[in-house]
Length: 285
Image (cartoon, rainbow, N blue to C red):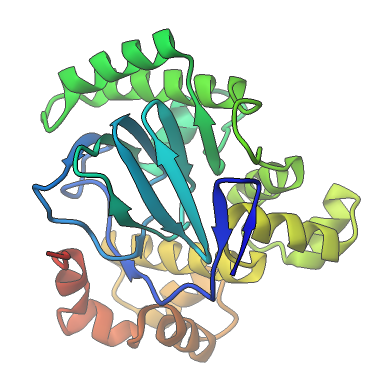
């Protein structure tokens, strides 16, 4: 184990993560949760299609993010892009934070004509800016009819996070940001194609992406395909072979291998044997 950038520790390869959607029910496009200790009810390591922001109100926490451990404290903002696995490993007795998430398509709509994507961020917000954001989150937390005000908070925090990127020990590399933007628009692009588009050697792109995301670019792209497959299947399409093809898998066997590697089950077990629902309800004590 070794430490990078002062607040980020690289650990062994991250364990398997569950698929757990962020939004509390299908059809919602935005939501704000609160978490405090020692109330409990932590989620296990998980990933979802919704990008997520965590704003620490007080205390400190250690998050597992891919194969990294990130240390955060009061006044700091963490951003998890679509598909990035994460888990709260440990927190102080007074830990209190807000988690804000938007449907991925809604986030792109909210963030403007360029369809910006949430990228991995770990920044310290200015005290006054943080206080305003906390007050706004407090008004919205756990409420049902909050789509538009949650989107406004989302846009504000995204802007503050990008502007505050210098107030973090390890800023997100431009190659990671640009690769995530390209993958959002063209998920079929592989490492070589992305590197060519960005005019950089594949090994340099791979290194910077892994450093920021805590996982390889190849694995992240596979996870994005799994999320697209889940989205298509949830929209009512029942033919898994057709859905696998539409999600970008070259064959159903490739899709089957990806499911087994990431989620520990086959697509049919996930969709038709109740595993999806059991994963969603899994919580740590």
